[in-house]
Structure formats: structure tokens, C-alpha cells
Length: 367
Image 1 (tube, one colour):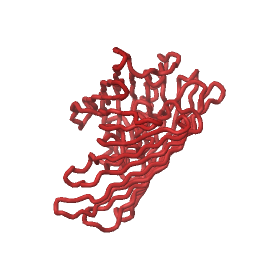
Image 2: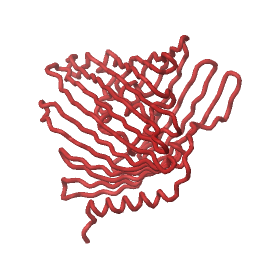
Image 3: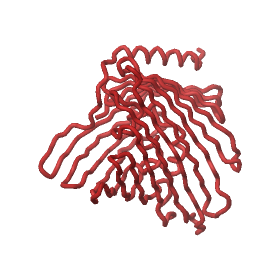
Image 4: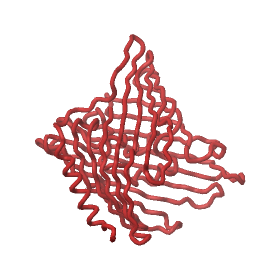
């Protein structure tokens, strides 16, 4: 029996997505966590996230191989609160349960303590998102597409974005119109014995509209958001087992976001560009990789339905063959209670290298 082709899969995906949309309820603002304890000097909130998903993929290599997968993409338990003047956060995860080719295991995703130093300046220590890339700093529960894209996946694969352990100083100016952070971090992608010098990572965010909930890819209500971010990361003196120590990994990037009301609708747009440099411990020329992204969505139907498109591009250094990979996502989000309860779906179309097209439908509860 002949297996169904990509066209059939896309049509089935669209029908499934539209069927799920019928069940949607009016949107409302999402609340984070359920407060279970509060005293004069201590508070505790509990949270949870579950993301069941159906994912379909087909490949240009291997005689048009196809793959279907049901999985729990993310399962998280979260705690946060305050102890006297310090705040804290903790998140425990078991991701990729029943995903093909994955071996899920329990791990700590976030574990940090934040101390106020005075004058709007704080000190944070522990495991958390290093301050690089809006795409990474935006929780994967509040993304435009079902998952993050290549613009942050490329630096993340080198340990230059996403969660790691470190110490940072952060603060706000003019009520959050400008936010800054600079810190020292370990690179989780490099063995500790081969990195004597920590990563230095810094970021500056400028917020020209609302300063509330800046890092999410859909807002609700009438407020307006206009944000620009500049960030950079550098780690040198990386070693190898032979004793060479001229290795280098660094990245610089710029990103921006606009989310404004237009009558009963909301219009969202985002963009990001990162340049990543690497050099082996034995020295030589650096390898430069350029990645950029544009995304656009419109929130309609009483702020319940958000069709979107997102485009990512990767440009490799000529020394490793050059070449361009383009990835386009087209899909929609259906909100029942903001990002706390929603259904997402998208179709992925890739060109350049091996084509890995696919479609995903995911439902989420997050609080």
C-alpha cells in the first residue's frame, strides 16, 4: 500500500487544526502560578506546564521517508516566590516523553536566587537563561511558532544561548524603559576542564511602549509594545585534550518586537539577527555563521485566533562549504486563556541541504 504523500499530510493537518479551533473560548489574561503559601517573609507559588503534541515529518533523502510521532514535548513543575528580600525560582522537567529517538530523563531546568542590591539593581545566581537572543529569552510556552527557530538554535547548539549556570547583575532605568544585564557563565556544551575562563554575556533592552511581559509573542488587551534588544557573548582561551588553548566562541545579535492594537485586532512583528564566531583550540581563522529571522502574526476574533508566518535563514562560513538554509513556518494559535491554555499548529517548509518538512499540532496548559 502506498504511503500518503506530503500533500495529504498537510491537508490532514489543516483539517485537524480547524476542528480543534471550534472548541475555543474567549481569551483572557494569563496568570502565572497558584499561590499556596504567604507569610510576612516567605511566599510560595506552584506552577505546571504540559505540552502534548502530534508531529509529522518527511525527508527528501531516504526515498521520501516519513515519520509520525505522538509525544509529550514538555512536562514541567515550577515553584517560585520570595524569602525575605530575595526571590527564587525552580523548574523541574521531563521533556520529549515518547518522542522518537529521544531518551527522556528528569532534570533541573531553572534554579536561581535573586537578591536586590538597591537602586533598582539586582544580583542573580544559579541556573537560568543567559541574556542572549530574544527568541531564547521568550519562553517556549509563549512562542509564535510551536517551537523556537534556527535563529537561536544555532548559538544554543554552541552553548551561547539558553539555560546555563552563572552569576549576573541586572537592573532597570526609567521604570523599565531600559533594562540591562551582564554576567559570567559556564558553557554547558564544553567540558568544564577545557574552559578556564567563563563566558561574558551582556544585553541591553529598550522598551518604548509597555514594559509589562515584554518576552512573549502575543499580548492581549489594548496596550502597545515596542522593544529593541542588543546582546553579545564572548568566551576565549578554550582548550582541547592536547593542551592547545586558542579556542574561541562568541556571538553578537540584535532583535526587536512590536505588538500593537489595531481596532479589535492586534498586530505582532518580530525580528532577530545573530552572528556567531568559532575558532578551534589549535587556532587559525574564525568561522562565521549568520542567522536571522522575521515573524508576523495577527490576533483576531476577539483576540482568540492568531495566524502567523515565520522565516528563518542560516548562512554558513565559506570555509565549511557555505550554503544557505531557508526555513518557513506557517500556522496559527488558538487561545482559550492567553498563553495559559491554547492550541498551536504549524507547517514547516525547508530548503537548502536535506529538506525536512513537517507539520505539528500541540496543546498547552501553563500556569
